[in-house]
Image 1: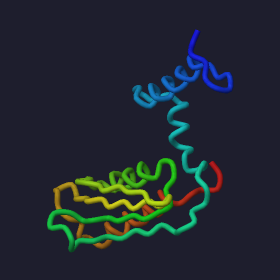
Image 2: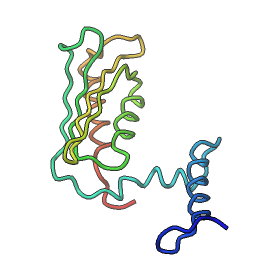
Image 3: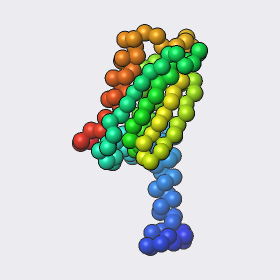
Image 4: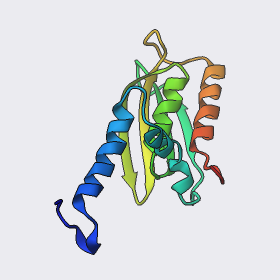
Length: 141
């Protein structure tokens, strides 16, 4: 018999559930329950108190474009930010991730597929739109 947890929850069943979900995300193809859990994290977040702010900087680093995202922290926020950058075909060279009083301050160094700064204003605007969409909370799943 498994270990008993406070409140009468059986430790074996709990760990079997955790193992099922974690194993499902790593399996090929991922299990439905794991995919469903990952795709629904935005719906669990409370409304943002502070609007998200996205800025680009091509002057501070000689090798990369800096993307700064300041947004209310929530489950899956970092995943959504990094996924938007990779979906835009950009590489992440380095990231500084901080959270202070439920506010995420993420500074990400990115390059294009050739390892260069992203200087094309249209491409940066497309990235901004992708990030804004990823940061937006949807009201229904």
